[in-house]
Amino acid sequence: MLRLFVLALAVLAFLQIGCSRRPTTQVLFVGNSLTYVNNLPAALSALAAANGRSLQADMIVKGGATLTEHFGDGSVARALAQRHYDFVVLQERGGDFLCGFVPSKCRDAKGSTMALVRIARNAKAVPLLLGTYQTMPEVSAVLVNEESQAARTVTVPYVAVSDRLQRGLTTSPKKSWLYADDMHPGPDLVLLESVLLYRQLFGALPATQAFSVHAPMYRPDAKFSTPAPISLPMLKGNE
Image 1: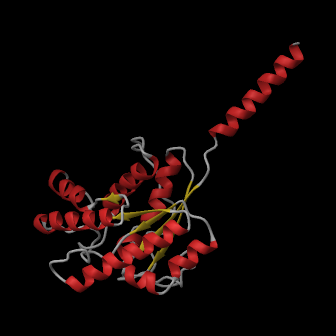
Image 2: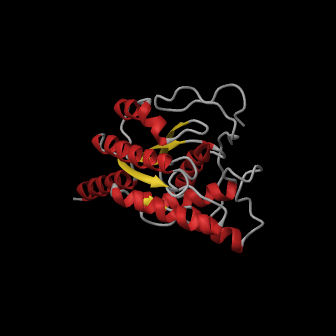
Image 3: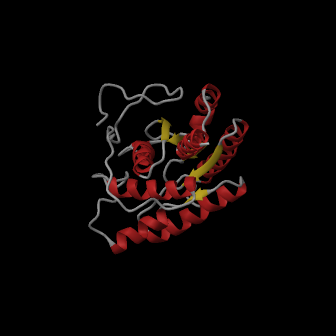
């Protein structure tokens, strides 16, 4: 009887250990320099690890690239055919959803978002739209409205960024929200985006704690090899 009791405890312990191991969440980022400057994918992976979760993030990125370009070159479809991703994070070039400024770019952005969402869903991945940002409050409000409408049209989750950045600029203006060029994301904005994405992916806010990101912090002029699916840095202009 004692032997059976000990065996039962051993089996129970094994089952508990097995249940505590969470599978790795696979995320594919599709975007541009707003995505790779200060390495948002790596920051999200590090934040997840600090909270006891395993997350692997790949990215298909190019400086100044639009979602239309990523759809047109077939890179996203190839990536999703090569391996399974749980989530596909789409980030358009900054301001392209502002339909009142350049209507043609806005139409392209909406059409390409719809096409990439379809590709992601066909690959059994959950697509979501990560917002961009504008520093002028009035333009920021319009941008968030336009991006949210685009997300609703294709029924995907929308992670707004610009309105949160506006609050940060007001309440904590000395933080490093922007890169030295005042255009690309600084480390504090990347941290904010990571927290917002973490909440969207896992349904809860991460714990408040320090963590480190052990990865290259890419500059705006970073060049990447042809993504299929992981974007690998080339030799010059990466850090």
